[in-house]
Amino acid sequence: MSIGSPNLVLCALIPNQFVINSHPIAKSLIHWYSGAKRDLPWRKTKDPYIIWISEIILQQTRVDQGLPYFERFIKSFPTLRSLAEASEDSVLASWQGLGYYSRARNLHATAKHVASELHAKFPETYNGLIKLKGIGPYTAAAISSICFNQPKPVVDGNVFRVASRLFGITDDISKSSTRKIFSDVLNEIIPPDQPGEFNQAIMEHGATICKPRPDCDQCMLREYCDTFKNGSPLNFPVKTKKNKVTDRKITYMVVERNGSLLMKKRVGKDIWEGLYDFPLAESTEIRIEKRLPTITGPVVHLLSHQKLHVLFLYFSNLTSKEFDLIARSLDCEAFSIKQILTLPKPKIIVDYLRHLVK
Ligand code: SF4
Image 1 (cartoon, protein in one colour):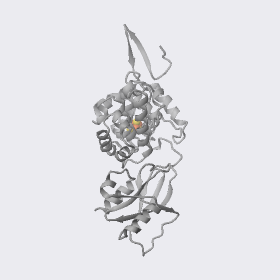
Image 2 (cartoon, protein in one colour):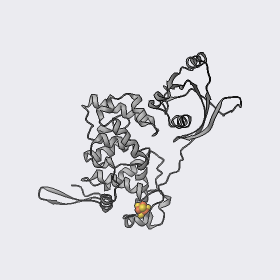
Image 3 (cartoon, helix red, strand yellow):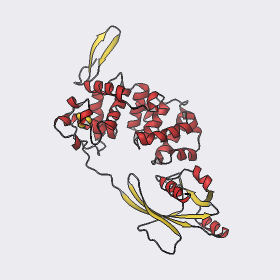
Image 4 (tube, helix red, strand yellow):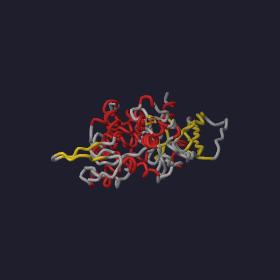
């Protein structure tokens, strides 16, 4: 039995069982979490399918925003097998509005793989989970600790913030090598008997107390917190590199005849792969010519690394011959509004259609 770590003491051997004394920070966090945690559907289960879906959704949105998406997705695909057997269009449509569509494609691919190659059973270890498509260190640690009691600490944005402030870690979190430094520190304090509770507690603490503007007055970790003691929580975590955002100018042609619109499925390897949108042109600037038909925009749409400036040109009153000719030359298909509502689409198209059918 190792007692090498200053932070974790396995202190006594009582006949037939170990008594594990957790690090006081872990103890305080878990105690606080047991009374303060929000009542959320994925906290009532250890089913790895449910935990997996919730963790992937929560990587890209806050809990209050992600909850309706989670409920909608689980209603459509209540089990791993139902997701594995679904069409890509229906998976992407259920993901609509969340963005990062590659995550939905990876969920679908992994569900198929686990269903067909692993008898619909998730691997129970971190090393087994991380081999699956779309499951990185964070998700593998979350699933293995919450569902299978593996002592693997999660490291995400919330955890970077809480741990950097607690321990005064000055390493730059925009460097990929820094993740290991945080993992190593958390490995010292994660309790082997409650790793899932600890991971959920530290994430909940980052989401509700140790926020970018922390509520230190409400925090039960003040006596341990390095940066609270020296008055510098707002300087942590240290991050030097800002996300680079590129501007893109897109002009969509919305071609309508008798209530049908021309759309096409995006096949290129990009963030909207597999989604349907209108024929488009991309340019360095957006020019608006007055003689053109109804114009909407430019509408600004923010993605994680792109700022889109989007103009919609609406063409109607076309003859059937003109409509067919445009469809052929732009390699598009005509869809009724009813059909379009069921297709997976980027949010910018959903918002435009809402305005169009108002
Ligand atoms: S005392 Fe403040 S900065 Fe430190 S962990 Fe608590 S909320 Fe975060």
